[in-house]
Length: 377
Ligand SMILES: [Zn+2]
Image (cartoon, rainbow, N blue to C red; front, side, top):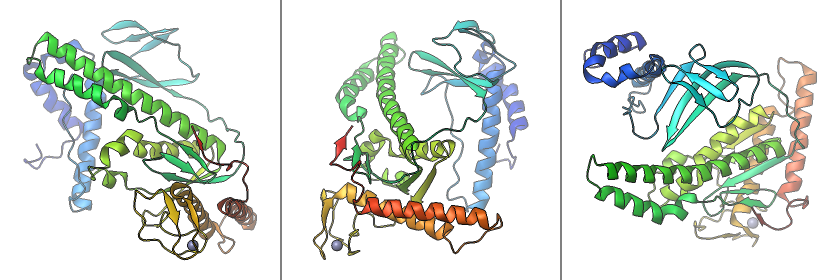
């Protein structure tokens, strides 16, 4: 279609699909009409994005929509709110009828739609509900700097460090054994199907452990801190390093970052990213000298000028915090005046100043309330 110079929008796609549906995909008549509806709309958007990027970025970063096969990875479809009914602990889906759910709907509000998905041999329905925003009470406004890494997934400037469960590393042997078993089964056989399911179930198990840990950590952080400063890591680029890729994926650094970025505003917090070339681990936070000889294997930072010694990750997180506060101060500092009026701007600058003071005290280790040694959770 693209070759013919046509722009595939949702209507063109729908027509094209209907033309070949009967011949190539007879199974589509067994499922609800809504299943391809949302998928086609998504594909239309995907093509529009692709064509836009093709022109805008000289085609360098344009990504062609990828093909998704039925029965591979994660099957899912979307149903709009006029297509299903929820009654107590049951949901009525088109063409399928009533399906019992494990729990009742947790939120009150207008139901917008639902997506039905499958992971290995379990089915899920995620119901989209429009609820009112409830302002969340936070413990304090304290700022925190976070150093993300592999040895310790997250080290806070307060001295606390969190270790990822590394569920993939722990299950790698088992995963390899199951995958080996799968590759030995005859194609199309019932035993191959069973082996496939075993692999899929283990993958789900690994992902669940990681997901649980990430959500608990990020929720905890956005509840406890008003300002969160992170390094703007290029996770995608780091993943090109094959020595690090598996470890990074196992910690889920990209997901950790993504969750903090979306959860923070919902809690009235701010997330500040410091530039990815900011030398957080190599610059001495006491005198500013650089230790360029520091390698990933060195767990302790030693300053060549003033002999300051500190745990590498903790040192980096405190540098990150300081840099984040500097960014806030320069963008919202007292020098800036805005259209919102004097009151708003002084309030904000006072807030920024207070943050900077709090951060400075913390960066110098003057508030040892939480920083009494390292804790691993
Ligand atoms: Zn120094």
